[in-house]
Image 1 (cartoon, rainbow, N blue to C red):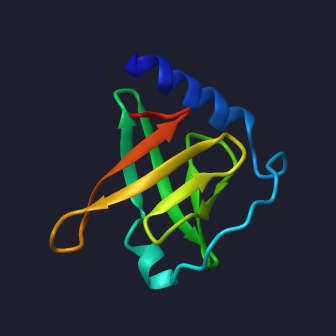
Image 2: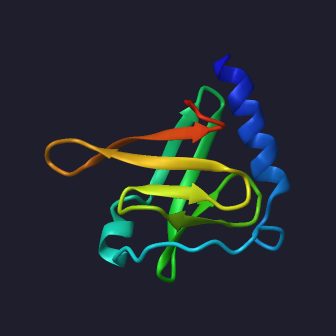
Length: 109
């Protein structure tokens, strides 16, 4: 089951670039908070994504794909624009990001 969703995410990330993505509203999150999320994450056994700050927002990078904007739903949960998936940054008690949770079609990775 797990690899199936990873494959769906890979296909969606490769097919949906910002030029194809629909504008969606987001809440403001400070750049200082966004910077705490910048890093490469292993979201599936064969899938790593890199999160970076671009201006005043986060973008997701995968392989050679274009940057995919992330729309803030809260200060730790973001919508991956254009593919109907969400990514949530999980922090420990000291406020350090330990991992991300990926949710797509109601299924958490």
